[in-house]
Image (cartoon, rainbow, N blue to C red; front, side, top):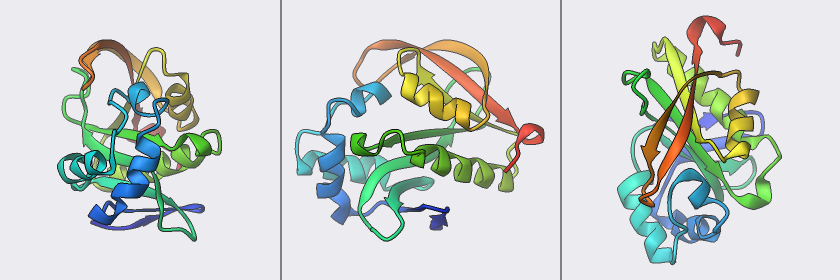
Length: 173
């Protein structure tokens, strides 16, 4: 899987030796639940998540240039809402100490460009209705609201999710 470089970031594949760094940030109760997953409880828990979820194609560790420490994650997967019809959807999270610095919009823009380079006609993103931080990322990246649907998170709760897309003809890199 390719490494993606942006102005301030390097997006690289996740590795098993990232488990301690992942736990440091994914154990934060303000991070995971907003995205629909439980805070990690141990380094071993994070290693399991690495092996089962993050060390997959099209999922990258977000690192700041000059550091190899993962501080978040971005990925591309088949769109979850009925209107997406399997088109790519981008998901993301970043460590709380880095919130508000524009790192995730920068990473998401790089993945939008990658999806369009691969031939996608539209790219999707979503957030739970209460997740205003994620909504701001989506707005900064130029997505347009398309629909709302219920989604069951890995925590087992049903959330009202708002789905957005950006079409190839509307993309301005």
